[in-house]
Image (cartoon, rainbow, N blue to C red; front, top):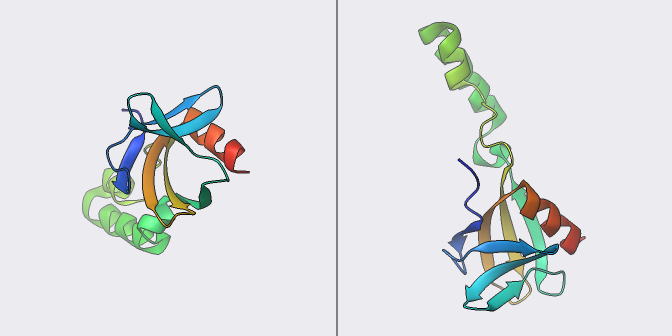
Length: 116
């Protein structure tokens, strides 16, 4: 399953996120786009698995899973590399709004370029 390519929380929740000719935007309405440029985005942060859970607790779960369920439990309980190519990014806008977006590799690369 691929990335949602949309705002999944915060301001503009449910709106699509698109990249057209290297320009990333949130689709506000029919033909209306909110372009994500350094003029409107104050900061951004990539949410990684480390943000969601500490690596130590993932390792501990892996060890417990290994003790209870053998090698399969070790994999299930440990840190898995799922969701490759799917990025969750927190955007802090200069107007005070915040959005959490989920985007694929192509849009992520365009976003990083446009905010550099």
